[in-house]
Image 1 (cartoon, rainbow, N blue to C red):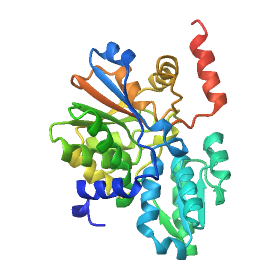
Image 2: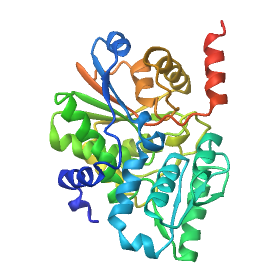
Image 3: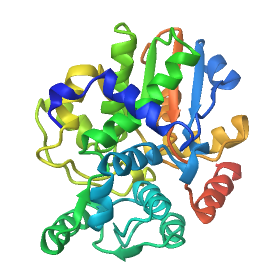
Image 4: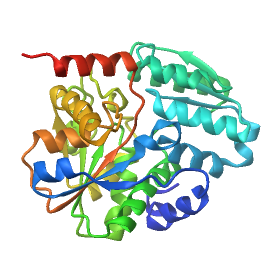
Length: 326
């Protein structure tokens, strides 16, 4: 789909078609964060979404748009986990043949969740970049239809439905904080939010250990970075050279922020303590920015908690560390 066709009308069409297929997740005021930031802070609970993350929005909408073509051809995707689980859910729902490729280092919880669906699951590569390269080569050889987790107009429009729900509930939000990897969520949310409220500010948030979009945003072009291990595994990886997300982000996003691994750990623990919400590392990035940065986001702030798929062992270790005196 040409970039010119990517607009609010397409997001609203996605929202209409997704009615009854996904949950319109709550947008709740956080007393704890509101006090901490001296602002009204609202949390969009996509961690409560079907399959445990926002990814089901884009995955289901993509399959709907493919229609009969998805029935004729096998689909193939690559994922750090959440997109793969969402597409596996959709493939089972629509009775589509699918192969899901994840890196061997993906979180066990996410691998196990994908494996529960009737799809082919392959563990390939030692990180997301290696898995993505091999997945694209595999699709080219087999003739399977490759569905990118972020570099796809239908996926972007599906993710943009989150912004519509948020601004329907609290129309006068001043800023949105959006966890960011390849930029599918950020592009969709920014596109929709700025169309609905041109004055709203939109910020992407990445881990400082995997800052591909941050560095690209500052360079004004896509650049490759060397990754380090991050708790926000769902945001890790470099960005495809031809990604349609990047020009949208340059057009509609105010800035990309970096947060430390320490702040991500704290955000996960404090979200459980104060909000009783289980949120994975990637999903907690926006809250980490509120804890760590001094940016003035305005009096009304919306933060997307993107997913809940966190390994029990990892969560237990974080809680033990937080409870251990230093």
